[in-house]
Length: 236
Image (cartoon, rainbow, N blue to C red; front, top):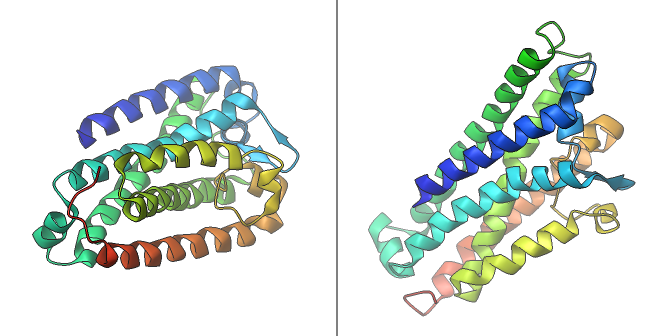
């Protein structure tokens, strides 16, 4: 089930990237600025709908697919899953470890696919602009960490509520919180893989990194704390 979801995600992400390359990326002077145009996301000053939605598909969409596999496992009963792996830490560690690997492969794969599409559509001589190392690095690192924050958020809400469908409102909430003016608040862990940040506000990169790291650690601690306190054996 999870593998089929990941395959469907990969198909949608690749098709979406191709469409945005044609619509936005191939008009840019080099592949670096093209990547920014496609994954600009949102900023305190505004956003463009298609790049914003695609950014959410890439990160929140992948987190939702991974969460579907997590929920599928809960169908066998929470304690059964914990007993199967020996401890809460091992159970969550296996799920989160696999999620990190999938998120890393997906993010790096999108970057490589972008470079291939730009090279084929425009040329191979302009794949690396003047700020390529910083922007490509931010794309990969922030992309993986942001996806994992979404994974943890969905996981914690599901474990705390005892309802497998509890993650659905979270998806809608994340989509709203990633838009101005909420994006201006500066402490919400949403949309921080937007390339508008290193492109327009390079001084804010450290702040966004701290926000993501703090939220990831907090959600992980909460997740580890919620499981032992649950009394029921299954989820509805």
